[in-house]
Image (cartoon, rainbow, N blue to C red; front, side):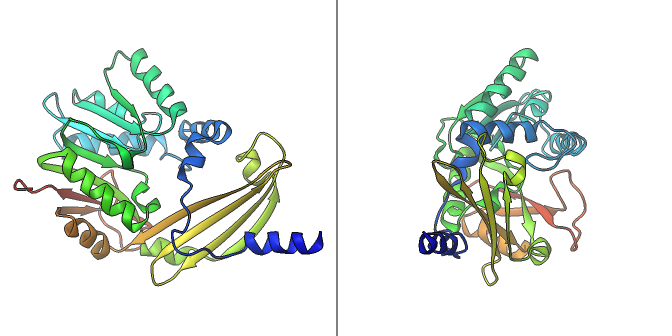
Length: 286
């Protein structure tokens, strides 16, 4: 028993190879955690899952102005969640599509759109697998979702953006900066019902082990959740970027970088800030 416990603890604290495991669906499709995630999304004073309401309002106003959204424009919001952006963007008159693989979040988004008399096309799909005959003027990927993807996934997603954008269409996405990477530290912690019961409705013991991959500028938060009848491990990878590195990724897939801003509300770039956003265009000849 002692050796078994030792080996289990050793595995909990094992540093995996970079992007060795990918468990994003655990957050969004599990019955309990998806409910908790939706609660956090709808907490307008928190930035845990979605940005706070005041920021979202400013962000939508800037996006509508910056990209001239109106009845003749179409927008796809990848990772739309419960529709905090899509519902507001629809008020511009633009044709809005939201893609997410959380049934719970999309159910809320659809109900909200219906109650507001809005026609928004919501698609339940992992956005890495999204396919459509539609072509969009603007694609958004907000809340630094791009950072949670492996290099292969990012390349595939950028290629998908190119396919689904109209010629001259643009993509807007935000990422965590190298300043944010520098602020992260490796550590290990443990608690009964870690994160106040976020991971399960049943009692559990939660372990969080954080690893930094220095040369790659990646951080892993590795959660091990020990319940009476099962043990789960959730891997939350985050890639951190310089402006130059992100621009190179986009340009390497055929995009033209048009603008770099401090965030998706159009702030001025701050070298000390923990995030920034980029606007890139699909060339007319792609």
